[in-house]
Amino acid sequence: MHLCTAEEWATAQRCGAHRPPSLTGVGFVHLSTPQQVHLPANRLYAGRTDLVLLRIDAARLASPVRWEPGVPGDPDGMVFPHLFGELPADAVIRVTPYLPSADGSFAPLI
Image (cartoon, rainbow, N blue to C red; front, side, top):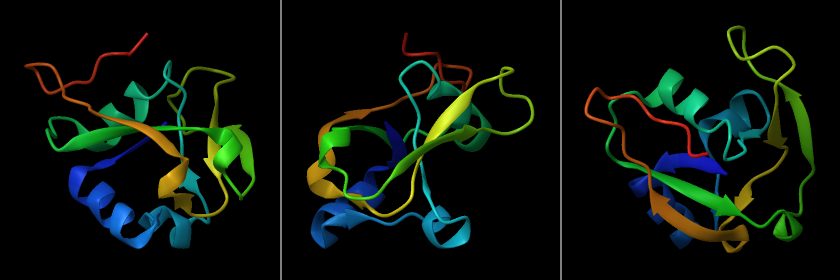
């Protein structure tokens, strides 16, 4: 899964791929599993109501995915998938809004 704004997703659809700033900054696209997506959502996007969840078919990715540690404060031993290349729009198989609760926090999906 990947989190982005609805506007960023619309741009990706027009361009054929999503190229977030992290791709040029740290060299990869941040991904998450359904069990961990709420962690970066709360860390980076608390209170935002313009987010969408992109569900990805990994078989449609041309670039490698590596499982690497997150940031301090994440549960011990947790690793996140990082896509070392752009996210092709045709690898996204489902898009759903991801809205926070009334207090602005995002609940775990599972």
